[in-house]
Structure formats: C-alpha cells, structure tokens
Length: 162
Image 1 (cartoon, rainbow, N blue to C red):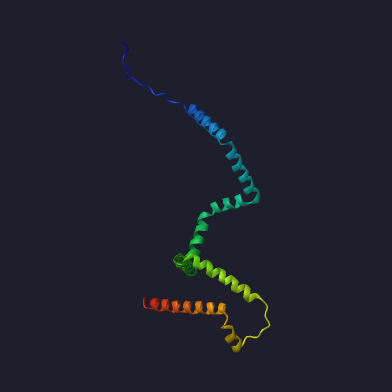
Image 2 (image 1 turned 180 degrees about the horizontal axis):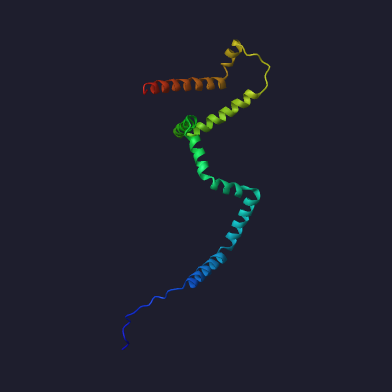
C-alpha cells in the first residue's frame, strides 16, 4: 500500500510567471475580439480627428468646475420652475387620451392650412353671423365652448384647493 499524502504543496508562481499568464490571457482575448477592437479603434480615430475626443477629455478633467456651474444653474429659481412646469405638463399629458391628442393636432394643422390661405374678404359682424351656419365652424365653436366650460370647472375646483 502507498503512503498517504500528508503534504499538499501549492505551486506558487513567480512574478514573471504571473505576468506571462496575464499576457497570454490578453493575447487570447485580443484574438477573440479582433473585429470589435478594430471598430472601436476606428471610432476613436474619428472622434480624435473631429476634436470630440479632446473636448471630452477636457470636460473630464474639468468635471468639478463643470458640476459646480451646472448645479449653480440648476438651482436658479427660473430653472427649478422650468423643471417643475415640465414635470407638471408631462403629468397632464399622460392623463390625456393619445387618440384625442392626435385628432386635436391634426385639426390644428388643418386650421393652420386654412388660415394660411390668402383672403381679401373683409370680416365684419354680418360675415361672422353668416359663417356661423358653416358646420365646420359650428363644430369648432362647440368644441371651444365645451373646452372653456371644462376649463372654468377645473379652475373652480383648483381654486378651492388653495
């Protein structure tokens, strides 16, 4: 019978052997990623030739100063109002049916096309009364009146919150 193993020696690599292993690993990864590396280098060359790489490097070096400027600008009352208004508008838009928004936008485009047509006709009280018989104008007026009613209702409800 063989003698039992009582000592296990772990092979300790020298620093030179460790470096050689790292180099071998890198060579293997380079050969496996050749196409991606070539594309990356091509992109870097384009960024360098257009000056974008230098600008990005300068921005990275000046990141503390840039952050200070940005924070100074963002903390201005006008900017915080802009951000708050943008968030409120985005919140309001999420509550609106996209189909209604689409119809309204296409109607606005139609209205702008019609308004852009040249006209020499004078608009007076009688021509406005005659125009009220037009079904398209009736639809627009009805929409406008219903919109104003809803807006007024919303303003009444909103003022009771304050």
